[in-house]
Each structure stands twice: as structure tokens, then as C-alpha cells.
Image (cartoon, rainbow, N blue to C red; front, side, top):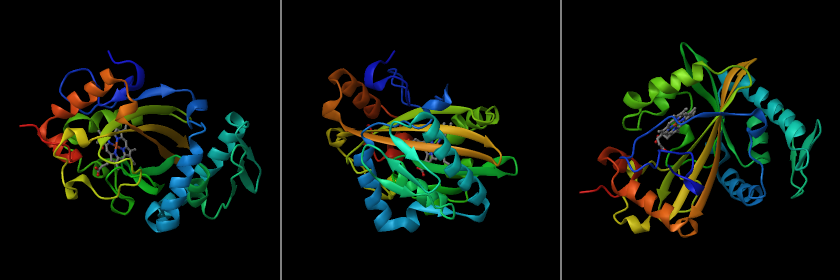
Length: 279
Ligand code: HEM
């Protein structure tokens, strides 16, 4: 059993060899968007990415236009219903009442609006044949991948570089998604150890020199991911709330558990993560 900062994280930290797991659990809709005071620092980091590279951080294809508009409307409704202490929402703008940040609600650019309003990243998936395709997204904090290379792809194709995804989790992911109905929200939180606190990592690990020394993996990156289903229009919203903390701030028992999981990770996962490959 894991407790404290590692509770509920995936891949599981249970002393067994590292392996992918779906790890989704249902949450009430009011917990869809976690709003806390770390958002102000995160928004500064996001602004920097958006200012540098809007084209690479916000992409909408024609098939994703309607669902992106529905996402903006759903976020405004959600903030009004559940976060009125932190945000004031009018037809024309959303004001963060703690920081004073004002975001103009531009219905012609829904994902640009969302990107500047909240710290989370959002992927919009729409149905395509018998699967889902990412037809629009705003992702500033990619974890060793980039949006241009994934936009328009199906869930299976998106996970193409993930070793063992197809064999271990693809079927379970499809099953979990297939059972979602309107408004249902699922959450999962995955972790990795990195040698950088940088939130915006565009280069795939396979083109990054692997870390040779486990001691250099000083940063615990946790992505709290939520899946929310819309049915009108039909869409799946994948939300990523990224948190990075220094390993020194993690209790030593947890630090050891994380490092042990990295040290004993199967070679294909270690290579995918650019972790040291155990001998
Ligand atoms: C329950 C649903 C899902 C599960 C179980 C799942 C699982 C995973 C796993 C195990 C990895 C590799 C571990 C890692 O990089 O941390 C991964 C990577 C990734 N996932 Fe998912 N995922 C899910 C849904 C999604 C959705 C809906 C999207 C976006 C539309 C997405 C986008 C990605 C991307 C972009 C990567 C990195 C792939 C790369 O390295 O190129 N995932 N996912």
C-alpha cells in the first residue's frame, strides 16, 4: 500500500516491477478542475509558452471546432457553478478574483481563450469510426512529446511510442471510455522522475540523451488527468493538470520507493523515459 504523496499514482508503486496501468477512478463533476493558488505561477509559465509558440500549443482542426466551443461554454458554466469564489464569469470575460487576471471570452477562438484562463491543458477528442481522434487541443506542458505530431491521431496512434501500451492497456482504455456517459468524469494521476523542472518538454525522450545517473532525476512530475464525456456534441475532454516538485521535498521513504521503481523498470520503459537502463 502506498500513502501520502504517492497515494493513487500510476504506474503503481507497489514494489512490483514498473508497469502501465489504467488507474482511472470516477470523481464528482465538481472536482473536474482543481483550482488552487498555485495557478498563478503556472499561468506565468503558460503565458511564456503561449507567447513563444501559440501555433504549437493551440491547434484546432475543422472536426474539433464544435466540441472546442462546447468546452469553453462548459468551463464557463463550471466556474460559475463551483468556483465563484475564485472566478467571476460574465458573457464577455472571466476574471480571476485572486490575481485580477482578465481573460476575454472569444467564442471564435475557444481554445486560445481556455489556454489563457486556466492552468490545465485540454485535449478535445471527437468520434471517428469506432474510436476517438484528437481533433483540437491546447497543451503547453507536453511531457516529452509535441502537439503537432499528435493532432488528428486516434487514441491508439497517439500512444504509438509507448512500449506495451497496445498489449497492456489499450483494450482497458477503450472499455473505460465506452462506459462513460454525459457529464461523467474519470481521474488518473501518473508520475515520472525527470532531470528538469521544465514544464514544457517538446522533444521526445528517444531524441534526448538518456540520464546515466539516477541521482540526476531530481524532479517528480505528476500529471493529474481527467476524462470528461460530452454527448452534445459528442466529445471526450482530456484534461492535464501538471505539478512538479523537487525530490528533496518528498518524504525519504517515498523518494526511495520512486527511485527503486525507476532502477528496476523494464528496459523498454526505461528507454522510453530516457531513464538509466539497469544492467
Ligand atoms: C485512461 C486513459 C489513458 C491511459 C490509461 C493512458 C496511458 C498512458 C501511458 C501509460 C502513457 C505512457 C506513460 C507516460 O508517458 O507517462 C501515456 C502517454 C501519453 N498519453 Fe495517454 N493514456 C490515456 C489517455 C490519453 C488521452 C485521452 C490522451 C490524449 C488525447 C493521451 C495522450 C498521451 C500522450 C500524448 C502520451 C505521450 C506519448 C508519447 O510518448 O509520444 N492519453 N498514456
